Length: 66
Image (cartoon, rainbow, N blue to C red; front, side, top):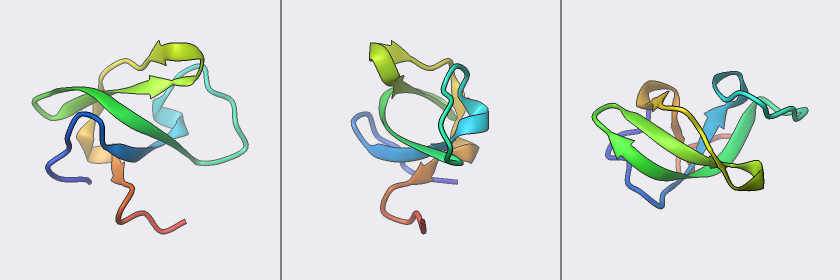
């Protein structure tokens, strides 16, 4: 779980937590655009915005091992 998430921060989200994205990878790199309590919304392809995603599944770009 990433801590101290900030709007504009680059993160990885497990694809199983994001609907309508079909890619041959397990994680999707994106940017946080909204934050509320322990949840975030992120940018998706085609200028879409995700639903609320628990910060417990968000992986900070700086600590990701890919």
